[in-house]
Length: 399
Ligand code: AMP
Image (tube, rainbow, N blue to C red; front, side, top):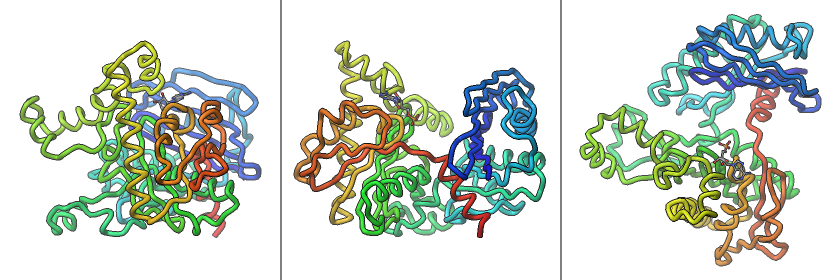
């Protein structure tokens, strides 16, 4: 059974076609530059590729091209549209309305669109893509939406509330939502499987570290706190996002830099983080390359990241009253031994001890990097959000 997984942005439409019989990706690609001009890059499991400039005035043309590529191109992988049993869509913000994977209806799409106020960059684009997908696919093909925020809907109010007047939370829905839920859910399930334990019996800190990063405390298989907040800006320092910052510093900078709120939002999201502190790059690899050349600001950036991750692990251990395992995932978590090494050094008080030599060799493979006598297990676990979206979609349509 084939499931198409879609991750749509305002100008792009990434996709994977997954065969659920063996969970293998049979084709994947990206329809890019939607609303600008258009380009598709596509790759099949057997190594055929297609790169073509196209015209994508809207998401509808992108979907039409994607289907045509799957069906009719030199890199086709299916003979009939009916081979695709369902479509699963990644949605960034589900707020308090969506706490689980949901079947797509017109009403659901409208609600996702209404939530664009809380996620201006993403949700409207998701709604456009959902409407386009409904036009291109036969109405009999079920579609599901999987929300980045859904996993964190189990957080208790004491974790998700901000210290603002309660009526402003009620009226404007300003609270912590948390993101990367699909990734945290995927890796925590993979962890339990790898450890041969029931996730319900584990206290876990999951560190998803990439261009965007978030850290989640998972107890009884449920998210009980997470580092991202109302938006994905909060938490630890990221590629171009500042992470947690005193709100007064923001209003002060707004005045000093003579910025309006939109300009300030752009500054905090795009000009800060690794890039802003180091003035080297938003990319972790380039930060470490600069460190090897003696760049002090790159060193400071790397030190900040490792320090902040360590602080979250400590605070989440405190609130869970224990810790069984730490997960590293995402581009940095899976690949950067330096970041893992820095986080997992001098934390023996918490019961964390890693094999530093083994850690140096691990890149993107599921590996336990803690020593046999470490009280807490430390794992590198490659994430796979698309696969979880496909699994969720399959589970929903099988009901
Ligand atoms: P993501 O957003 O999950 O794709 O992660 C992107 C981040 O992962 C960037 O900062 C990359 O520099 C980092 N990254 C990817 N591969 C490596 C690697 N081999 N070593 C260190 N960092 C890496």
